Image (tube, rainbow, N blue to C red; front, side, top):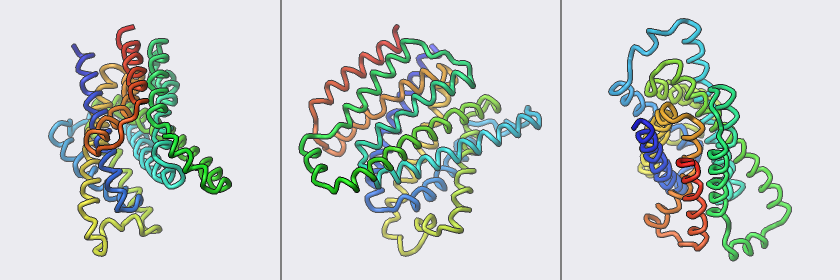
Length: 311
């Protein structure tokens, strides 16, 4: 029964992340990445604190010794900084390459989670999880491949610039995957140390927000979301803030709770389904073009999930 609850929590996280990504896509069309990252972190810090007050254990540090508290703070710093720097790298990769290339590369975080989970948590990567995960990852690249007309358009661009931008964009996206993997692994470790998911989430997000606030003293564009001249874009900032509260705040906590039940390896592998859900929501909500390769990708995903869950 507990395993089923873990799967339900994972599916909830997948849909929340996918829906939030559509809001980010909409909001980033009107706002700058640095400005909305800090605004979003402020919103997420507030929402995670409220959630922690309601569902968390406020005395979560009382049972820990000084070593445990030190390790908790350390893992929270690592998780908060890695997810924030990863987000910045992802936004920068979108400046160099389009989302259809960048997003699937971030799913490579799954590859980094496997060795981390084996080394740190002694979790076993079974052949069924490994093979099923590879099938799901291959479907992600099929979903993100370009149409023929888009490829022709790309060839008309300057080759030298495209080559340089492509290399930088790909490296940034891979770095994003690595940092996001570190963030989830360290958040999971913080959860193990405290026995509390919600306060662990708040602490790492609050640390990230304070880090960006300090960085903003030297790079003022991080504060643009709070400036009067950007008041007309306030609805976009708030939309991104709410989406961040649901994804980075709530969905991440659900993901870690699912990892507590079913293990980080299995849970992370299943979340590789997120791009498929994102595609479905894009077709339904944004009326994006339906592509035949979507059916091929769905077939691979179904087979991959069957292998992971039942074999």
